[in-house]
Image 1 (cartoon, helix red, strand yellow):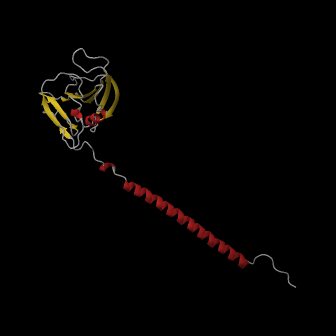
Image 2 (cartoon, helix red, strand yellow):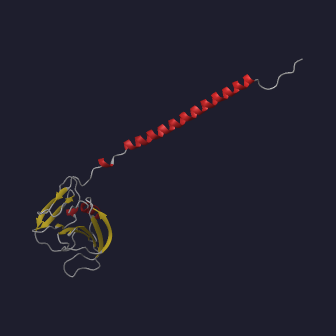
Image 3 (tube, helix red, strand yellow):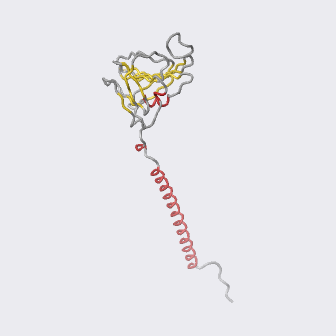
Length: 216
């Protein structure tokens, strides 16, 4: 009797190697395609996210439709919110808001600036004073808090003061908060003051938006 042969023949060995190679290639191909599909899905998701976001350039500037004011000689330009009703003194470049109602935002009502006669001075919710020489009638008061930029790139220095006693004659009452803003360009300077009496309305947020529109 013949002895049974052990192991594989050369042909069988080659056939096994071929089968393993085909299986390995198929697995590699499937794995590679899965990675490509995942990468494509991730890229598509990112692109859709970018497309769905609002471009910065399309965000409307809320001050765009505000009333643009200039004094007679165009020393400065400032934009005023809807609903504001300010006054100016004859032969001056100053602007006044003598009541908190006068600086209250009312959508759709264009701001107004009218001539004012004499007034007694106390707390003033809004006061703007301009000087071409760097010296203004109502200077900044208090301690510097911070700085920020106008839309045209000018530096605005912000000051804060707390009135600690009642005035002997005219002036803001005790506990009035005073915010002063100074904007300079060369020798030209604009100072804006916002007084908040104890029962007054804090309008610093919208006033700072107004100040950012100042152009010298």
